[in-house]
Image (cartoon, rainbow, N blue to C red; front, side, top):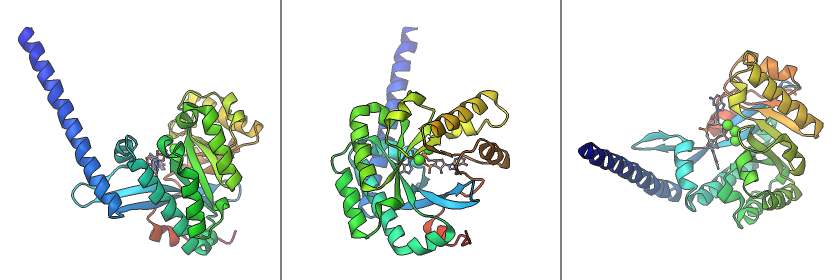
Length: 279
Ligand code: C2E
Ligand code: CA
Ligand code: CA
Ligand code: CA
């Protein structure tokens, strides 16, 4: 048994060692990729259920590495969040989104896309550079803050609600839209929503997956929508993959939907090639 125990320890520590090595390898490559401006931004269109057309989009960062191929954001964002790299990535995303709006705002508007939502990590949101970075990008590309939305996860805003509310207010004062991402997955209650200066609540994909068949998911998502509306907030559902999802959300009077059923996240050239709507 003793022998066994020692082997276990050896096994676990080499496993940890490999994990750490892999993390450091990714981090090293990520630094280079950022410096060489190799990260890209894709945009997933969001759809207005009432008007029946696209109305906005979400920027999603993409890293395609020569050696490793597509590296999912979940993998490298988590690593980047432990260091200042996330701020560099975040700044690059803001810059690219503002550049896109500035260069192709007319095409986007013809498609129906009136603005782009950007994800913010906690470290970036609470960083003292955030407001300056946003303002200087708006100035550099001469675009309106009204064309930007920021998605803040529920766990981010719950980290330090007092401080978060102040930063949210400053972003709102600039003219940006705000939404709470992945709503329902964290520890905040619906009552908290009242305190946040936000425009929209984004219902997490995990609840949408189960509608209209799973009774709990139906109850949770319809309660989120109803409560958000009572507080004067709009709602968007993520992870809409089927006609049934869409029909359910329309019936619940959810304003917007986003998901593979409408469109995958698209490289910019494919985004700009979407059909132009008359609406
Ligand atoms: P998120 O903000 O919840 O983004 C939605 C994720 O769901 C995206 O994954 C998107 O591609 C995926 N998705 C969209 N529609 C569907 C659908 O119908 N079904 C399914 N199964 N998935 C769908 P992605 O692009 O891999 O991003 C993962 C996460 O990485 C994001 O989750 C966000 O937390 C983070 N992330 C992505 N881009 C950025 C960024 O620029 N900055 C920061 N801070 N985080 C980012
Ligand atoms: Ca998001
Ligand atoms: Ca989300
Ligand atoms: Ca989610």
